[in-house]
Image (cartoon, chains in turn blue, brown):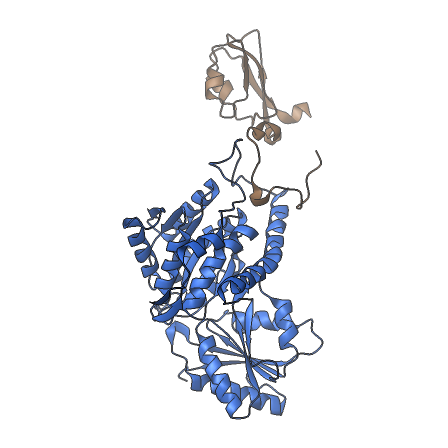
Length: 390
Length: 95
């Protein structure tokens, strides 16, 4: 296994090179620009067989991807932030048509005010589009998840977004254990497609008008595909672990077994939170971390089984839902816990909007607040802000 | 026709074969119905050329009927007919 020093963007581009998709249609955007740029050089240098389409917008890029995927090709693209927002309409179409497209996404805040740095507003805004969504803590996870995403997409017949955190991961160099090209090809195997316009003997129609009499049934199928994707995601993560030594699931537990307070984080902050948990443990606070990896489908049963046994849960949300009920991760975890017999106390911590840095010390403070809530058995502030000037 | 449940439909809302538009009758939107007078018709086929819904039925280069399963009653055929061989009547009169 080659050891490489790669940024998150380089790692995702490298995974794309090894996957060697039939078509990539893209429109570069900060901080994901390099993924497309590096991949374009792979195309120019003849290192991949990909048909590379330079589109005039992200809306067009994903539209071209849909055409290529419906034709029967293995298709990938990359975007971030406003780009993902511009794709929004087309995200639903890719999912509804059940096309296994994979997007290498880099999390970035949304305008306005304009900002190019990391938060999760962009991908959180795509939660209802019907895409499987996987977050990455670092470049290694991004690389591994992009490769797994091809197989997940082609088994579930649902598109997949794999994301990293803008600049924090996308531009940060890290030591990566890569796979050999042949290993990747062997792992992803032959392309599987739900249907193919090019390789079909009979003519058929993709994307016809679907009114009151059938739309509901097709949407119900899509919901079921999301349900069915859960064991597929788990299987791929485990199989990847058996073959290459790094296993993946819906989430990762860190020092949770004997914990009474938990921090929930996703993306790059999970690494920071892990250090914070160690410091909290040194201070005698029984803290643990649940690092969320897959947010669509939302692993509500699995999360509830673990978190319901705890006393206090502090959720770290790098975006807000604008519902005044807190961030999306907070709302969904709270909802997941509703059917459990025991309910922990919960607090939401909105942090890091527009790329505001988050430190170990700040998360230690979150953990200490959690411990205080546990001792007093009450929550004063349901939604709190970390690193914000009052 | 019994409609299939969600478990039995092809995924992605695709239509698995071609030519299915003929199975989907759309003529019930009509408020005006074209009445064709065979004795006046010279089969010049202007109506066939102008009909936006391919509802003029031709056999051996002669007009033989109007396909009311698909005719929307727009009346273009009546407008273009040089022989007044088509008259538009209220659909309600026939129901």
